[in-house]
Length: 70
Length: 293
Image 1 (spheres, rainbow over the protein chains, first blue to last red):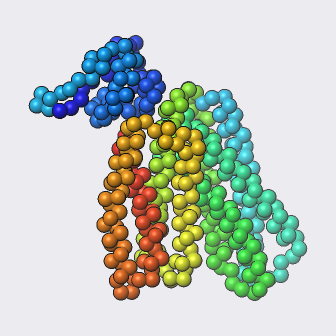
Image 2: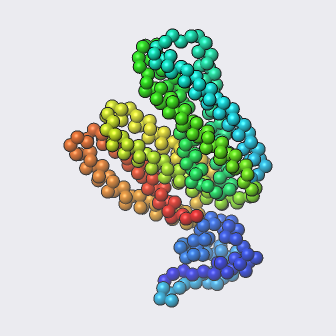
Image 3: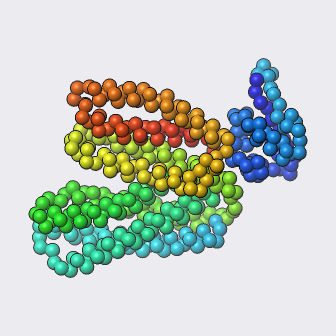
């Protein structure tokens, strides 16, 4: 089971927010945001909640579970 | 590039031109002095003045080294570009800067040995090699400073700056560790005498590790553990685990080599630098591998 996310879409909907700008808002590096978007890194609970709070959304609307068979 | 950094670059370039003049003076003095000393010809009192100017020259070179390293580091952190070339230049610059101290020591030794009527060929080799290193660093650093002046200005967030310093630290670590491994392998393969290895390995190991520890100290002073986000911490832990796994077979190999007939003395001197350099290079490589750009 993997962790999926809507980060890229949310950034574009948020006036084309860059990875670096989002990273600055939640206190991580740009490559951490890049790695999360590409599924190479799973954020901690705190980071996931920070990202969700930034977009003013529940965390389930930012991150979701993906069955590997899909 | 910000106005302040640009001004700093311009001052450093000016200091670089003065340093270049100083280096040329040094090379001329050494070139004229070497045949006289090696043939034990009388040295006129006028050479005392030349010696004092040589000392001033070393100071000017040292001052330029400090300025240029700071300027290049600041420019790289702000631009987030050319991290690997900057790390290589920092290693070269710190080694060259440390060898300025060796220049003074070697000249003193040459003076003492000339007075005693002893051969000083070894000291001259180190002196000329060190000046070769100064020349190399001067050339590359001046080129880099000049290139940096044309970089566009732009602000860089503190988080991004910290990350560049983190990458620079571990790139430097990888370069220093790899250089150290090459030194150890060279010592073994060229069949240097045990006495020479004993005399030089500690100094060369310290010189090789110095750039990494200086940059690591800078990173710790700026941010340290607090400057790492969760992904970078995971990279560090993962790199540490991989390093431990790779070090275990190396330790067994070194133990075997140390016990082998004919190798006992050499490997009893080299096992520590081998472990330290290999650990540094694999740990730094592991951190960088887990942290793609």
